Image (tube, rainbow, N blue to C red; front, side, top):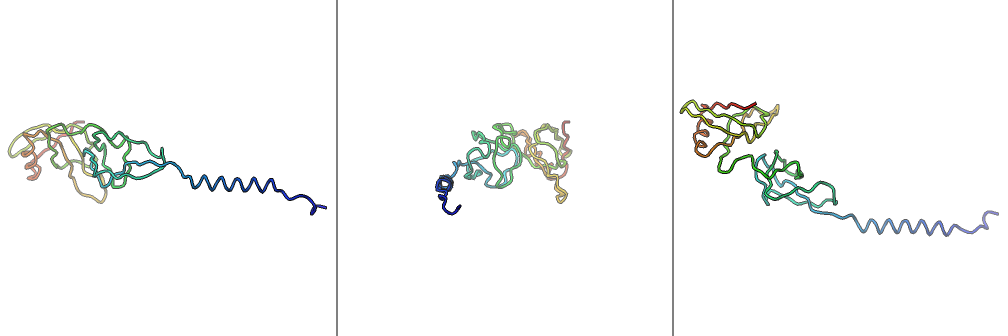
Length: 172
């Protein structure tokens, strides 16, 4: 007679203990830590400061924490993008005292390459470093980029770029 057997009290207790343990585990939650995200779009070569960073809480170990001691954006950061070690550098691509000047560059020109800037009216020649090139986008016809130039030629390069009398030679 199977209806006279004892109920499985031990199994019920084990099941109840598992449910209680899962409930306690869920209430405990996982450890979280604050991680840096771009508060707005940050162009490559820009020094990242406190207003540029938005801190968000994520589970510990979700992303690698970068060294935020004098960080500079290594590439363009979109708003809301996490700031990870590969997206920053500690050195600015712009030498101290130099100026970034907007000039026409071919789309996709990599930042960091050397450029020779030649003006035709007035005639001048100076060196530069590509900071950012135009976006390579099918919907954009912009050729705007920026080149870092020595301070004594910054105004001359800017005027020549505005007037269309600037020739930019890029090092291979």
